[in-house]
Image (cartoon, rainbow, N blue to C red):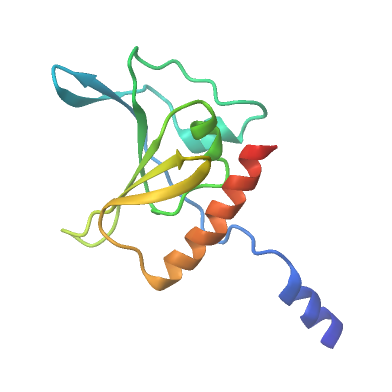
Length: 142
């Protein structure tokens, strides 16, 4: 029994929560403002699960991709958005009213980071985020 318990403890954590994602948007500067333009039938999680780089047809001048998600923690393949040259705005849905959180997943000086634009992370989420950012950093180097 003890070897089985030790094996369970040393196994890397698995994705325990399924992240739900709505249709994503291109964030495009227009007339001094940032305008969100729906990308029909495009979901980053689905698109980045495919082999190879992220392939998406975006409007000219797109500065970022934004997606509503059930979790503020980035998904395992979100590094592909950064590799394609776009920050990823994650807009958490389903939280308490008035507590909407937005994070900007970006690469800054070669480091992957999540910058909170609105709201805060819990201690538990901070730990999850550290683990995920390390994974994204390593995946982006492959």
